[in-house]
Image (tube, rainbow, N blue to C red; front, side, top):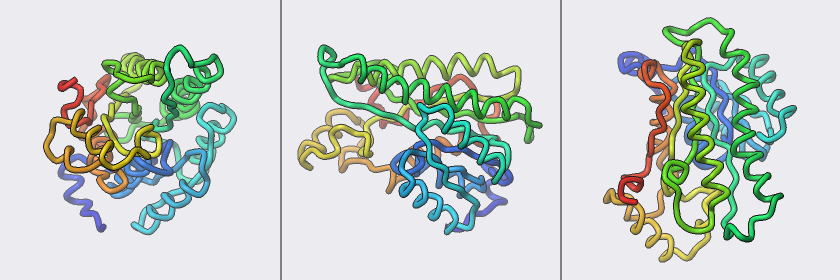
Length: 277
């Protein structure tokens, strides 16, 4: 899809000349975000644990006529995170946009969650964000502004991090609640650097992390119908691989000059599920 840079500039959505790091970029929401940012002109560093998946995203972005690299990492491993950031700086430039979409979950009753699982979930979902924030932040804070700001941080939490939820996910929901608190706190701390920090809280999406993605189609349909008020969301399970505008365009707004005066916000993209709940 060819982009019209003049139209993007007029709308305040042009990302030409800006470098983005997108975690969890190999599939689902992260992949959709990486491609949306690239279509707006950003150079994208794709990272996740799966080499094959991030290389696929990289190749798709390059096929669009944009620059991209793929650097594998486990977000919970600070050494690997530092390597992602250093490689990005060396090959693409200092990051202006940091999107944190890595995540891990497992459906299990609270009384059956052992210490190892609890620590694993928080290591990826919370410490992983912290690792990237520190590693990329040291460059973002010191860089020259591009336009009005020095950078954009976008976290990906969950609507359950905003209001809790049903069904054997206490450990996951607690970790995503921590991401929401981190987003709001960091926005206030980094405002003095002219770095905006915002979050997206997705609702029910059929991605690889969804515990119910392998349920029978009828159960998937009922899951959607029970949780999403907006009409088109009831027709089928929503896959951001096929509908990147649902999450990707929100990330584009938060990464763009159009959102320069927006910070400390965590925005649900859920078809009204949060209010319905």
